[in-house]
Length: 90
Image (tube, rainbow, N blue to C red):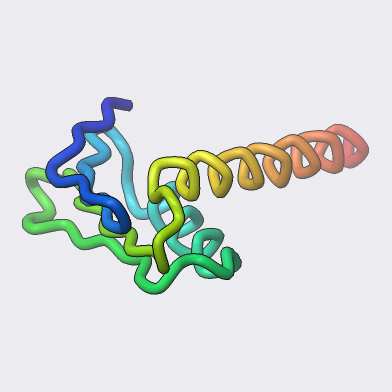
């Protein structure tokens, strides 16, 4: 996975996530909506053959990079819980 910053300002961050699909981007979009500082969270893929999601995050003034990092940390915790529960299924 490679993250490429396309545009950045005080309350807006636009970035591409090369090597990822709708799975991570959909989860990240949904998790960002749980943050009280997020005004806009979404992504689009220009063409399915290129398959590079472009993500857009806008906040109410909070640092958008920190907001995305926090959301990714929360998703990591969820993934760890899921792994632990999957081990119990064996």
